[in-house]
Length: 339
Ligand code: NDP
Image (cartoon, rainbow, N blue to C red):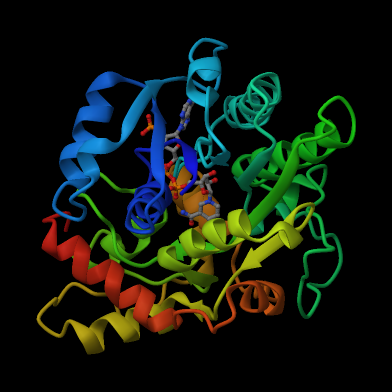
């Protein structure tokens, strides 16, 4: 049994990871930004785990020094997941870059000071496959890095993830020697939500179900199930061979129209699931007034494929199929009354 810390405990992926760690007998401490969030989290996880009341919570903000020493004290492994993940594009990229980068370094420094060597950090496929200047490569691997200076193909969230991951590896190779780091690069994460508060990536599915996305842009994403992201964190924590490695976690790519087809077939009673395409000119026009659409605009007609042989080897199995992940998001969004 390990004593684990999960940062950003209130988040979508963190909730799944906490449940899986508890299920496997580990002790879990989590960081939250407020006590109220911690209470809500315990209440949300209670129906899923008899051990939810054992979760210990510590207040800590990525932008402040306070709390991190208490958070890491006495733990064996840190799972660092906290990072700002807004749907809209902020005016100032530093709103995301600063907390992502400085927060990761705060967590790593606190771990080293407390004598905790093992850290598994959720980075993102965003740190691998963006900032592309020429034609899109056929596929990306763990050897690839996003170029954050090529802003036409690298929005602020993407920049925040690659800059934070780079800063983590650079620090570990310098002042942070002795820290045993693994990073995890999920693509768009779907799968079941564990509480009604979850937003982030599953919001695309919610928008398709409740009619907030009436037309489908010519864009797509590669998908992975949240249960596989959690399993990767735990497999990495248990396998010393993963130290110093990056792991892409990605199943298949789907165009938005294909995602809508899967949802329409599974939930025929949901009449608002879109079937018609959104012309590119409309995406360009709407992106002038909507931060959400601006995110989609830079993805039009792009097919980014990230290879996942390495994580399949780590897990010793195949990944949960993309369409199952999509359906699980939809089922649980409906179950929690989020759509
Ligand atoms: P969520 O937004 O659900 O979780 C993010 C967590 O980070 C929340 O707990 C949030 O706390 C916390 N957080 C944000 N800003 C701060 C801050 N300044 N100080 C402390 N905590 C903060 O997102 P996900 O669960 O989806 O994402 C978790 C991680 O996985 C992130 O690092 C994200 O970049 C990465 N990722 C996610 C993907 C996805 O498709 N979902 C894909 C690839 C990577 P609060 O509740 O207080 O806001």
